[in-house]
Image (tube, rainbow, N blue to C red; front, side, top):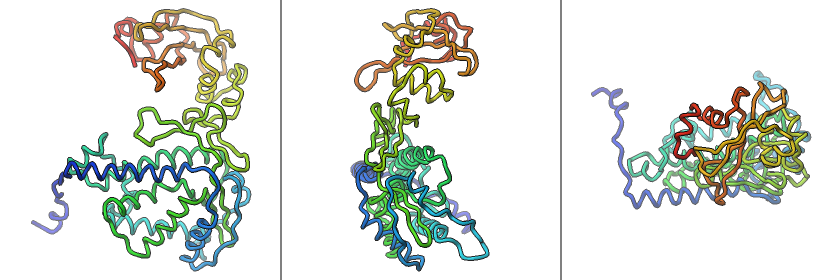
Length: 399
């Protein structure tokens, strides 16, 4: 057999002992919870620890510690951080670009140590299946299980949802920025391999990883520049709820009574079940504001915040038809005219009751826009499931 053929031959999967697999996954869940707690932590930053870590990264680039400017939110930092000049590739790179290169090189070396291979994304997108224990017992490599079950979850919750929501709220050019506590997915990935899988990193790489880990435990977003580093405080308050159907620790930003994220200087981000919304949706939703809103997701959230029944009553919608819901015994389907032309194509509103109970045992009422040619609520309900009204009427129970 040729050397090339030998290299391509895959080793057979080696199943984990059930007890060993259970122990590994239990510790992985604990580690994920530990880093998620850092990501969602509110309250004052540990300024001394953060400044020491940033100074350590500057030293790796042969630069003295910068002047530190602390601000109360990422919004305040955007106006204070010096704008990065255009990169002149013929001359020396700005410090922030050199720092990005330093971080990328570290990830490549650490990936090599854990066997992920350069450019693999640290295993973040490897999905072992719905049950990590079954995956381990079937011989799935711990690398992929840890990648999907630890850093993959943290990336979805923290980097994509929380940090992504903050970025969208800023709605302006940020320049090169590091996310501090919202960078936990990368740090936790390598920490999991070091603490759970027994991977040993080179001393220098381990020390640099600890600098990034300290920042994830100590502060909010930060903007490093040649002479100055602007660092944002952590939020003063963070409100979340469990993500429906998600894994343990998968959460959504949500607060029905105020900002989901509130920073020490008063800057805030409002969210309704994970959807970023204007403040009025949470603080003071009205039929008039809902009627004027053109964004369909914001409009839906505002109606849910107000309550579908209150919206229908206060908006004076005309009832077209009502019928017992054959897919949800004991509930009723209500069909209304929608007079708002700027909401898109002419349509009607079908008001129904969710077939599945909420966590508190109640069943949520919700509304669906349906084409305006429906006069029968049962036909409209069937259309929403891709069925005719007659087919929908034969359902035992929908979900």
